[in-house]
Image 1 (tube, rainbow, N blue to C red):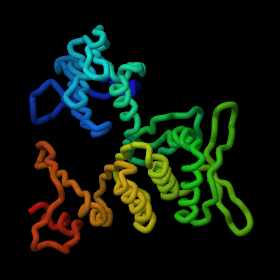
Image 2 (tube, rainbow, N blue to C red):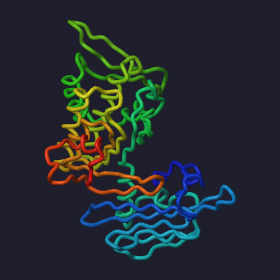
Image 3 (cartoon, helix red, strand yellow):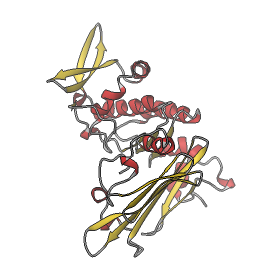
Image 4 (cartoon, one colour):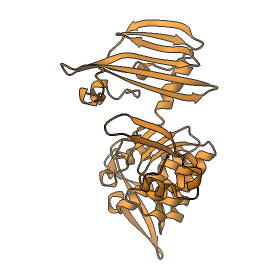
Length: 321
């Protein structure tokens, strides 16, 4: 929505409303700490349950409690840097105001927030869905990473990070040599992966690799090209299609990048090894009772259980007791 690709009706419907409440509104809030302050974004979506109609009832953005933007009931109010009121105008109820604003010399705080939202990558990598070819470049990676080749076309232009990635994959994937794009028509490109065997170099298309190799390639590209670029990686079950020895080196690299403040990452996993590796240092426990709301809190264990693997505590129901 904030990237301007879709309207609220493309993303939400009455079935997405909270089931254990009767509210006809959905409220989302997001805080980002940056630029010596805190951005607070708030979005309220209003539904009419008797018919398939929904719209944005409220959208606002603050920086250190200072308004940068406010939209209510079809009217947008903009503010310049420093909180100085800007123009007021009617606006489409179904689209985000943030997504439509062009950069100006006096709205740098607002446009920074919009550009930062483009650097959220939210994926559950499905190796079966990866397309083999690309007709054009894409700055946004889709949820299943289907358009990975289109996304990689942009990032591969960074020669420094491409070199680092190639060196890493040579150590991780047996026989890996390099990537290359094969032209098919005027704009279409196929991503090829080259391996060395003996004295020969063998070329494969991305689709010809195993599901595990494809997943590993996506994970390493995400980590290397996002590092030191103010990205937030949100990856659901990154260990899918991979054996533990394959995922562990990537986890260590990602953990080091986050520890050095080069990257922010959120991983969701049910795998016991990943739980034990990460939960003790940065674990957050989500628990939902029956059909009620999810409760969120840090992972803790009773002092008498110290030394017991976190995954064992989960298995036995002793987590957070």
